[in-house]
Amino acid sequence: MIKIFHKITLLSALLLTLGFTACDDYLGVIPKGEKIPETLADFEAMIRYEYGNHRVDVTQALILLNDQWVSSSSWSYYPLYKANYFWDEAADRVALNNSDETTYYASYSAINSFNLIISNALTSTEATEIEKQEVWAQAKVLRAMTYFNLANYYADTYDAATASNKLSVPLITSADVNAPYTQVSIQEMYDFILKDMEEALPYLPKVAATALHPNLGTAYAFYARVYLQMNNYNKALEFANKALGENDELYDWTTYYEENKDQITNPESYIRTASPMGYDYVENYSFRHGSTYYSSSEKSLTTERAATFEQGDARFLSRWKLRTVGTDTYYYGTLQGYFNYGGITTVEVYLIKAECLARAGDIEGAMAALNTVRKTRILPEYYADLTATSEAEAMANIIQTKRNELILTLIPFCDIRRLNQEGTYTTTLSKVVDGETLTLSPDSHMWTMPFPQGAIDNPGNGSIVQNVEK
Image (tube, rainbow, N blue to C red; front, side, top):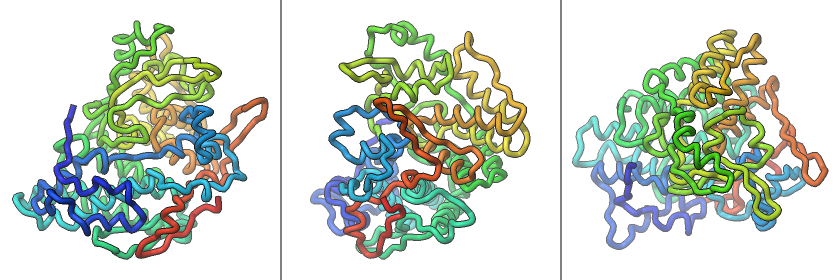
């Protein structure tokens, strides 16, 4: 396991004091006993600061999807949880989101660090030019990845026809105190993300120092993700193939299941086993924490969500087990440790490739990419190649597999929004609660999350407009 410690505690009190301006205010005061960063090692340490700069919290998206089981005590205590969990379209989520939501503030805290690196790494000391350029480029990739997450959480999904007219999120490129910023359009945000990637690409290494440091594979995989979200399937396929050229390994969950079968199948045992999805997970292009961060246990699933996994899915069976506690029945998370919920893995890229091939009419190639993943997931006694005779049939298989494979990450939320906007492969969520059928339609306003009220009330040297009415 990589043991990563932050040498410069510039961000130690940030989340406790953060108004929007504090995204760049913290440099105004250097804590006693600390030093102003000067050497490249000082700036590179910020990339290693995983607790602060690699947390990708998307809790409300997981709750809206019902990809995470929420106890009655939780949704009773947190009205925003309840509104999203039960798809209450009448709820004023803007008013309910009146706290410093981690998704927003942790993301801009990380962006501030990346801005600091980008502004100073090339003129830092005690390093070669190549070393400086590498750290500078890695910060650019991480900034682009963080803005992608923000844009696909707080703004509408990308649509070329409207992207220039709809607002995205505040774009901050400076770590200076009180630096001005603009809430740019969705098109401007995607242009900025792609520009950061273009500038970073020539200086990225094939092999990086740790799983937190982006390399060429990370960049290619992220390019594939971005272009897919923009419905540019040719470019997404191009970069998916490049990413798989850097790393195409898949973890064999059927082997993990067999090695832990006695405990997994014991109905009386809820002892958690070690998560294999940590820093050294063979599927990693990059590692970033999710809503569950650092060493922790995995979120539980609803029984309805668990029912959507394939029979014999060793990855599902190894991670969740049916449990009843009092009046609550759910699928209990049985893994403990580290989880790459916020980074990028090979399985996502295989499934991006599968979708792009299906849309290009190569149904056989699409299913081959999909089945390459499934062979490492489905137990042999249940496994059979999935086949399709049309794009629609192939897409149905790919969409469901991808949603299950990337559960508890932001990607299923991004995918459903993208597909709903396209209008061909839409998703209507549905469940029965106390005899009443609840639904979330593809065109619901709830697919865009409201900015936290604290950010609206304290916008700093700029202004923020809510992207959703409630």
